[in-house]
Amino acid sequence: MVPPKTPRDASIKLPSGGEMVSLTLPPVPDGENAYLWWALWLRRVFESQPTPGFHARLCVLWTLSGFGVVASILYLLTLFLESRTRETSFWFWRSIYRPSGRYLVGNQRTLFALFSLISCGIFIGYFLSFDRIYLQGENLSDAFVWRSIIWLPIGTHLWVSSWANLQATIIASQTAVGRQLLGPTLATTLYLAGIILGTLSITGLAIACSIYWTRTWRAQERLEYALLDWAFLRADDLPEVARQTVEPLLEVLNSWLGQFTMRVMPNFFRDPSVRSRLTIVHALHRQIKYATSSSSRARTRRRSYVRPVRRFHIIGAIASSQKNLNARRRQSLSVDVGLGAEVREAAAGQQRRTITDASSLSNPHEHIPASEMRVDLSSGALRRIALDSSPINSAARQKAMRLLELRKVERDVLALLVVIVLMASMCLGIALWIAAAPTSVYSNWTTIEVAYFVVPWMYLCSVDAALTFLLFNSLRHLAPVRRNAQSVVEANVPLPAAQAMAQVPILYRSQEHTNGASPHCTEEADGDGGRSSSESESSEEEVQTPTSDDVVICLEPSAKV
Image 1 (spheres, one colour):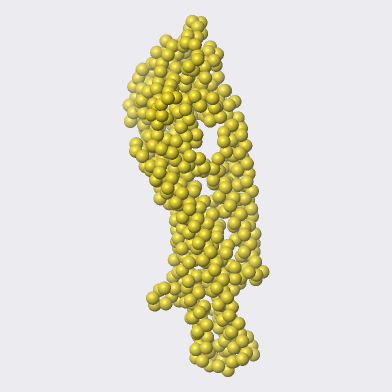
Image 2: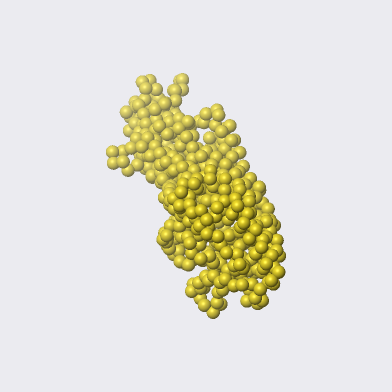
C-alpha cells in the first residue's frame, strides 16, 4: 500500500467553555487508512521539521549569546579595574542613607553586566536544546525545560535594571521633584518583593511547564504507537469505527495538553516594568527642568553683581560627634584664614585681575531675565558653553555638562523604554496567538520559530549593543581620577592661592544648593550612605572631578587661624 500523504490541516480548537486547548481528529480521505493517516497527522503536530536555514540562524544566535557572555565578563572586569583605579568599592547592592531613611540600591552597571552574563549563558542552553530536539531528534520529552527557564533571567534582569534606574532617579531628584515619591521602607519592600515573587513565580511556572509537557509528550507517544499498531492490525476499519476507538486516548492527551497550554501562556505575560520606566522619564524631566531653572537663576544673580574679593571665603561643615546622625545640620562658616599678608595680597591681586579681565569681555552688571536664560539653555547653547575652556567660565561649563548628561540619560531611558514596550507587546501578542489560534502557530515551522525566537532575537541584539557601547565607553574613560582632579584644581586656581590652599584639606560638595540657599559641605557621598564630614576628609576615593564652584575648603579643628 502506498503511504498516505501527510495531512496539512491539524485540527486544534478551543472547547465551547474555553477552558483548555484540545485536539480533534481531522477527516480521513476516501480509501485511506484512518489509523495511519491520524498517526502521521499527530507526528506532524508534535514533531515539526525545521526549514533548511534554521541551522544557520541558530548559529548566529549562538554567536550573539557567546558575544554577550564574553562582553559581560569583560565589562565586569573593566568595572572592577575602574573601581581599583578610582580607589572605590566594587559592589552590586548597597544600603545608602538619606534624610528620609535607608534605601537598598543596586549598582545598575554591575547588575546589568551580571544578569546579561546569566541570560546569555542560559540562552546558549536554550539554543542547544532546539538543536538536539529538532535537528538531532533527541530529548523530545524535555523540550520545555529550557523554553520555560529562559524567562527567569530575562524577567529578573528587566525588573532589576528598571528598578535600579528608578531608585537612583528618585533619590537623585527628590529636590527637583519637591516631594518624596517612595519611602525607604516601601521602596525596599517593593524591590525585594518583585525579585523574590518574580523568581518564585517564573521558577514555578517553568517546573510546571516542564512536568506537564513531559506528560503530554508521553500521552502523545502512547497514542501514536497505538495508531501505528492499529494501522496494521485493524486496517479494514471504517473511519467512524476508528474514530470511536481513538477518541478515548485522544481525550487523555487533550487533558494534559490543555493543562500544559494554560501554564505556558503566563510566561509570555511578563510585564518588564514599563511603569517604572515611565516614572524614570517623568522624574528626569522634572530634574532637568529644575536644574535648568536653577542654573538660570544662578547665572542671573552672578551677572547682577560682582562678588567682593577682600579675603578668602572658606565654607566649613562642623558636625558634633555627640549629636545623632539624623539631627546633624549642615553649617556654613566664613572665616578669615591668617595665611600671611603676602599670600593674601597676592591672591587678592590675582583675583582682581581675573575679574577685571572678565569685566572687559562682558558686562557683569547686566541683568538678564530668567525666562530669557531658559530659552537660551537649549542643547546647542549648552554644548557651546561646555566647549568654552576659559578659566572664568569653569562653573558655567560644569553646569552645562551636567545638564547635557541629564538630557542624554533621559534620551537613553526613552530608547530603553521603547525597547521594553516592544518586547512586552511581543510577549503579549505571542501569548494571545498561542491561546486563540494554536493551529496557526504549530501548523508549520515558520510560525513556531517566530513564536519562540522573536523575543530572544530582540533581547540578544539589544543587550549586545548595550554591552558594546558600555564596554568601549568604560575603556575610553579608564583613567586615574586623582590626576585629573589635581590638574583641574591647578588650572582653575591662581598660583599664589593654590600654594596657600595646598595646606588646607579640600572636600567637594554637591550642587543641591543651586536653588539660592547658602552653599554647604555635603555629608553624603555617592553610594556611601551618610558619611560624616570627618570621614570624608580621611577618605578621598569617592572624590569626583572638581570644578571652581565645587571646591569647598573645610577648616580642620587643629588648623591655625
